[in-house]
Length: 327
Image (cartoon, rainbow, N blue to C red; front, side, top):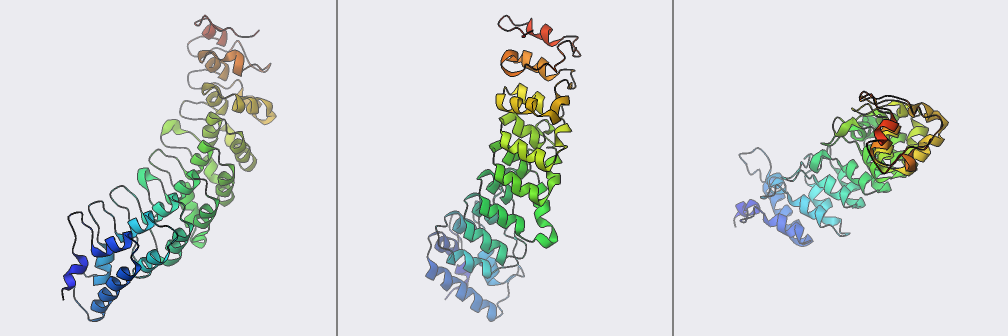
């Protein structure tokens, strides 16, 4: 009786299709799409140049969501509705809502394996962005999901899309590998490095310009540190924007596990007396943090090294009454 009802919105901007999809009403979704397709077959002209089906599927509510957003968000092992929505508009990129969420990123962060696979298999070029500049790959690495990480990395491999995605930073300049290091996800780090080892050398353009090895050292995730050094043996030479190496960072964060690992690794011996931009060795920082006795004691340390304030580590300790260096 009135085809315009297909795209009619309520006060929240929801269409009938949006509500039917959100509530899991398969029959209603099918009926609405069937009617829209019939109008398209009858060559109903729309001012936008799109078909009635496209206009209905792409209609956004006040949150910037289309029907697929909530269908993916509330998905509970019912794949039929997402499949129906996707197959009716394969060329659409399914861009982000007002919160910066794309359907692909929502599915990935909620670990909806079937939906992720369906989006990647059905859509020509789906958007993969998420809030804060994080991508779908960031989301699954953070949630430590092996299957979806593999799916994303394998997708469109011939066009090297996966390598670009693996290097894509969020708003903090962190790549997915930075998050694998932050949370100690060794296997996710291995998956990423197996695709492209060069991502270990990517420096965050913010957050002190840390490498992934700096992040792992700051958190004491020795397993990730071993994986990084195994696959990228020279990444230990890199420093952050303060000129600090991984031993500086481990000491500053009072992380005994990382310090112990570094000191026992002969390959990393030259880090011990390396100075940051203020001339501080790791022992200076240990003294400042009131933890020299607990964290640092190595015969290779230069205990007479001066920083730019003309202080030795011992001079730093004299500023505190409750700590002295072991001599």
